[in-house]
Image 1 (tube, one colour):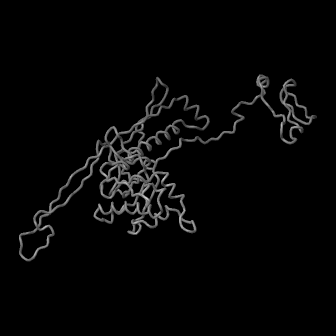
Image 2 (cartoon, one colour; image 1 turned 45 degrees about the horizontal axis):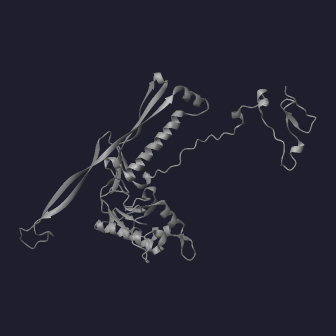
Image 3 (cartoon, rainbow, N blue to C red; image 1 turned 60 degrees about the vertical axis):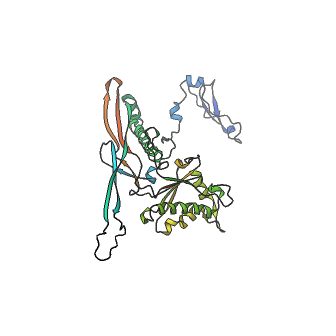
Length: 353
């Protein structure tokens, strides 16, 4: 039987033989005070609260820590339906005859003839699917506390879908011979220059002007290979996170109010030619160099130069009950294509930074 002794300086809990008291003496200096406790006898007497009633619940469900950045670094073209391949067309021009300039003087039969060679490139498309199983009883239990197993699993599938796209567009799939943004074998690969002392290529061992030289040299060489087409000036650079952290955290100037990153963004060749240059960290650049060093990727982030296809974006294609398992099975499916460098000239790799 519960006893209440209001005449004492404290309030008694439990039976007379098992009693914890929180009284005036417990306030003291806060050290060694008697605390209200639960023990086996108290529980046996039905005096304990349910554990769930004594919890302060955080309603937020924390998802795994991860990184998905493909939306930032490449254009996705959606639509087209279920296909096996995608294709693009290219044209090369050439003239025949000795008079390649086309300049004539008066009457002549030496007029060059224009020729056009149209060819088609084929790119692979991959089907992607994932299922989730919703046991009926489990789902009903979660609904009583305001949760949805369907919503929880749906988030997991969408996360996995985006991570699959991330890996496909950045590094491709080795087993089927598909590469991505950071490892296309058709792009020219070079090392950045050594520092003035000749001891290191790494940015952390270089001056700010030497780092700027690496950036401007990369832009210049890609632009030169594109016959100085104004649309082919690289506007997007990816580097490893630790290299990005270095240029963000290293201050320059007498007042120290500017870092290396801001200096690069304001003084590069692309900006000088009216193009906005973006420099971003990418975990895929870490160790991507031919010798395991960090790689700098320089390219034009524009769907005239680089994109990938999503013929079928992630779709919830079917749901059906499985009576013998007392559950519902839902299938998600999508199709995703490989990254397409439509022009190789304005994209380059520079290792060793």
